[in-house]
Image (cartoon, rainbow over all chains, first blue to last red; front, side, top):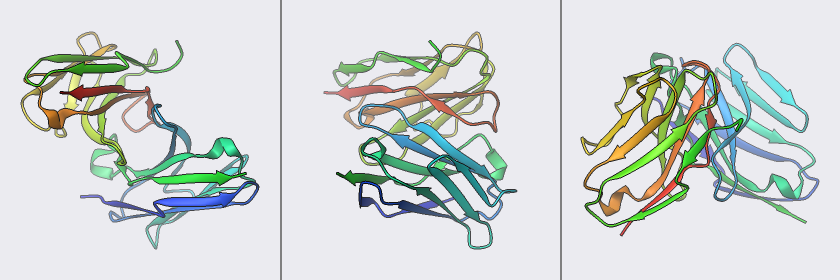
Length: 113
Length: 113
C-alpha cells in the first residue's frame, strides 16, 4: 500500500525567511496531495492541495510543487510569520481508495522572531 | 456553525467503560470520516461513510469499535470495553464527496484511566 515519508521532523527558521517541507510517496498512481496545518489542541486545517495533473499551485505565501517522476511533493512558505508556527502534515490519496488519506509523520515548524 | 463540530472535546473514563463520540459534519457534506491521532503522529484512518452507509471500515482496530450515521448527517463513534491503548484524539472530517478536500473538526481527546 501507499507510504508517505515527510522531512524534516522539525524545522526552525527566522521570521521572514522561507520554509520548505518535503514528502515522498511510494504509489506512483496516487493522485491527490493535500497539506494540513495543525495547531496545538486543534484539528488539521487544509491549507493547500494539488492533484496529479498539475505541477505547481500557489496561494499567497504558500505553494506546493509536485514531481510525479520522482514521487515527491513539497510545501513552500515564503515570508514566514510567527503565526505560521505549527505542525504541518502532508498526505497522499491512493487511487484504489481515493477517499482515504495516507499521512506523513508531520513537521514541527518553528518561526523564530 | 460552519465547520465540523465534535463533542465532547474531552472525555476521561475508566478502563472497561463504554464511550460515544459525536460528529456534526459541515452541512451538505455527504462523506464523513473518522481518524485517530496519537501524540506526535499523523491521523490514522478508521472509517469512511458515504451517506448513511459505511463504505470502508477497514481501519477500525477491532470489534470493540463501531460507528453509525443513521440519517446521513451526524455520526457517532462507539467504543466498547475501553482499554488504555484507546487513549488518543479522535478526529472527524467531512467532504462534499469521496475524492474531495476533507475538513476536520478539533477532535475529542479520549483518556482511558
